[in-house]
Image 1 (cartoon, one colour):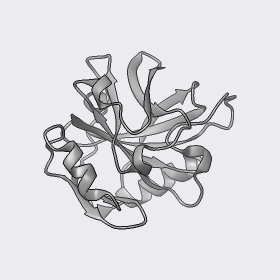
Image 2 (spheres, one colour):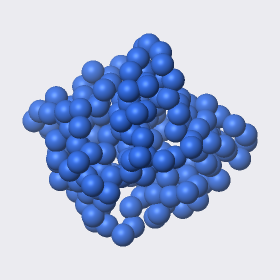
Image 3 (cartoon, rainbow, N blue to C red):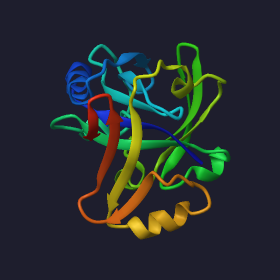
Image 4 (cartoon, rainbow, N blue to C red):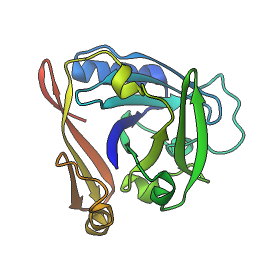
Length: 198
């Protein structure tokens, strides 16, 4: 399992974009629409084939069923809500309510693990899993931004159990777990203007 990207939810895409660009001091790149879940996004390439995603409901979309990333229940200011990993054995990684959903955006095609009610696995404590069906996923295709992930911390009441479950599957020293409540994700990003915490 490999860390693929981090997702920031926002009530509107413009609000999330302005918030992240102001924090990091860099401009996001165009993303696209996800008709199946009624969302749209903008992206930012990070070092090491990672990227950041700002995602929000698309007001022009008609969607039947819940949106993914728990966006139907999201409110408040933009914030980091989800971490997404690419799993070598995608089917085996579909845990904590995730089901296999084939996805497409333009020429991009991938398989995503999404709980039926659109929620996040263990409230965001367990990574959402995907498998890219392309040789050039966004992490490899996006232009360099001068930003890099230094550390991702998952604060969760079941931190020890989640860490144990991922042992042997996810080996990334930047990902750490801490016991606590409420659930919270925190990312430290090195930027051209210095270290920023999301």
